[in-house]
Length: 367
Image (tube, rainbow, N blue to C red; front, top):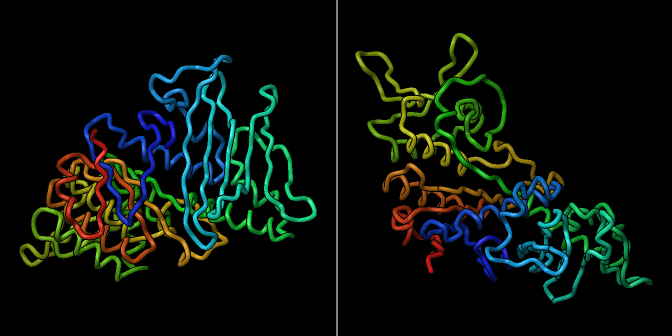
């Protein structure tokens, strides 16, 4: 985040589990917002979709230039087979939202793509990308409201070594950005029964019971692990995490409590507290993957070769210390396998509970 909201010249290296901590106003949520915005742009979204409040993204006290323009700058570096590839993006927020510059740089420092706003009266930017053929550079206009890197696979033929290098770098960045699942469980929407089906877990986890109904039979090993997590973090005895099919065709999740008077006893998850519901939802996200989560990863790359990044703003919201500790430990175990990365924010209590856990990096943003 070169210049974004309260951040100036900020760069953070992400571990398998990275939790941003700090007092209110230190920029914890801003870091995740910038990441999610890049993910949306990598998936082809327009600027207006990724930045619904662009003026709010401009750094505080940033002054306009002589033409009345103000903006912000964000980017990322993605490591992989093509080496560390860096993406830098400059966005104008005022007087109108548009891209004013983009740069894609290879690990050796070579500029693979650059765009610039040559004529403010046009809706395009002028792009140049590395070719290394009979013509060393290709020039063409690109839309001024899209990420140029995401468009390169549609524009570059891949006939020369230079073009293939550009494609490899662009695809590495796009695959990483598209493999992001923002997660914000909403307990008030998770309490009621939901229609049975084979849907994927949504961002708010309101269809938790539907997904549990699917994973209970389709993925028994992971479901058994989820039940063990429920035992560790939910109040009272928990023997199983089940799903009841109701007469109207809907389903609801139930914590199996054992037996009572010779009959099975259980507690519908709708009766649980907010912390328990968020705890269960986040555990389910960590224990599943792109095939179960409502996201659109790069289909041309096998799941086994992708790393899913879960963004969880307020990772410890409504959780007690025990639940935060258990969930951080689960995240460390899952993310150590290399297929999932967790980036979240925590409050001071959550930071204390997570700090010191093997595999968990807490980034303190306090001055």
